[in-house]
Each structure stands twice: as C-alpha cells, then as structure tokens.
Length: 94
Image 1 (tube, rainbow, N blue to C red):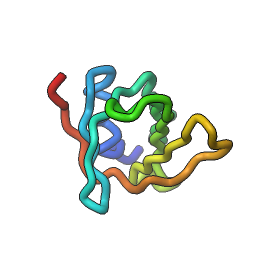
Image 2: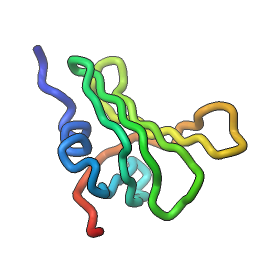
Image 3: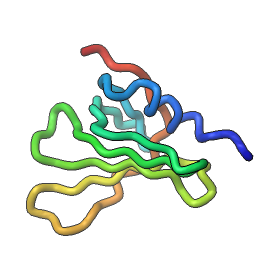
C-alpha cells in the first residue's frame, strides 16, 4: 500500500489541537478539527476556522490521495464551496 498523504497525516497528528493550514494561493489560517479519519489512504476531516464563527470546514484527499482539499459551508449555504488545496499544515499556538 502506498504511503499516506503527508499533509493529511500532519493534520491528523496535530488534531484536536489548533493547526495552521496554508493553501496553494499562499493564504493561511488556524483551524480546529472536530474529527479526522483515514479510510485506507483516503482522508477526511471536519472542523472550524478559529476566526470565523458559524462556518463549517471539510478536508478531503483527492481520489489519488496526492492532494488535500479544503471546502467551506456557511450557515446560510446549502452546499460546499471549494476554498483551495492545502499545501502545508503545522501546529498553531493556542
């Protein structure tokens, strides 16, 4: 079996402590994951951005498990919106 995605592994290992996620566009923010899990190589997590109340965030790996994607859903939105690809994850200061 191929290795797990290193960004997904880092998010999983840091959670439930805050984690700073950096996106492919260079933006970064601090998130707290409520749940993280692997299904073989596939990764999924759900949480919140600490500076944005009432918005849900979901992380998933792509089909080939090469990338981790971040989506968001606001309180008045019915579906998920793609935010970007997560390129780095590191433990954030609490």
